[in-house]
Image 1: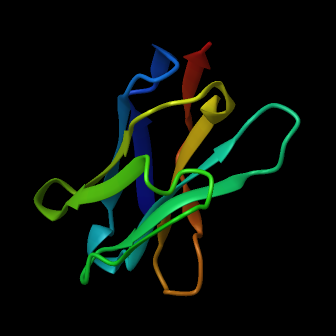
Image 2 (image 1 turned 180 degrees about the vertical axis):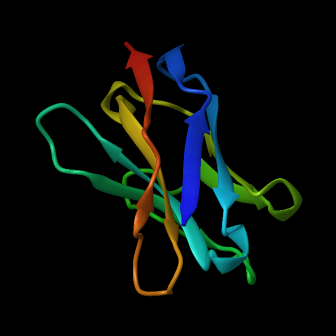
Length: 118
């Protein structure tokens, strides 16, 4: 099992930046990839970004590509999401996720709230 704990959410003005972190513990050597998803009130969960742990291959959702950057620190078992040029529509609960098998995210954190004011 893997446990994921997010941190770093908060309130920021439109155009600003924020970085959220996700610390993994447990069987971290089993993690194939980690990623971020978000869910705004009344909306479905949306893919934000994903990175593979060994090859550092990153992918992004269309809504955030060019503004957000996912990175990782293997020594700290931590994944970061740097969010720049934030927009009010980026407001959501951001969830960290881990893929242990290469077939999809199957472990989730509790989420951290990001609010972007206009």
